[in-house]
Length: 116
Length: 111
Image 1: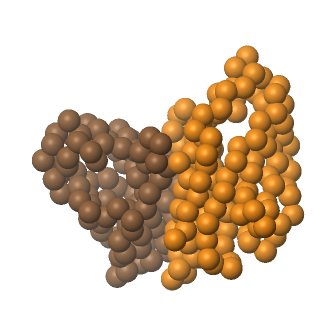
Image 2: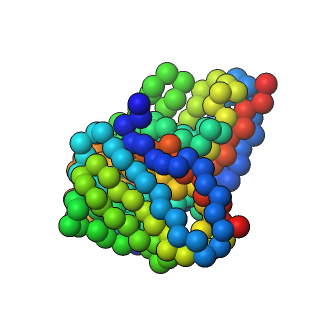
């Protein structure tokens, strides 16, 4: 069965610290996508990144970076020099592409609190 | 205007009442989804649809029904609401296996 595990329920850091959010997934599919979404206190889901299973290159976008390792089935997310505006719940998700859909299996989320 | 619009944004209803959550999209996507978010559980899939003739149950469909009135509209109904259906509900769309685009969410409280 497909599954996403975000073992860190809550993380608290002080502004300017670097923080890594862990994501481990399980799937037997050879083709799949991995996602990260941000949910700020306002509640909406903000798309951050999509990575396909054939592309293991790390990605950097400003202060955000992602490390995808198929060997350990992990897709970790690092925020460098965290800011108070980064405070949110972050979800990692795995796609189930059965039937041509993009059904998402979400982890339980990691709540990040960045303190001034 | 948002590409995926959910109405209402907030709703309080009584146990046993029927309630409908509506979702409309302007992205022209064919696939639509309803998810439910509970604290500590992430989002879970309730129903999904390819078009008006294609409706599929997700992981937690019991107690819910849906209607795909048109390509752009996908409604979720709770026939007889119960308190453990209190949650944040999200509608989403996708085109094939591209990223899913989410609505703003509907916060439902059943008292």
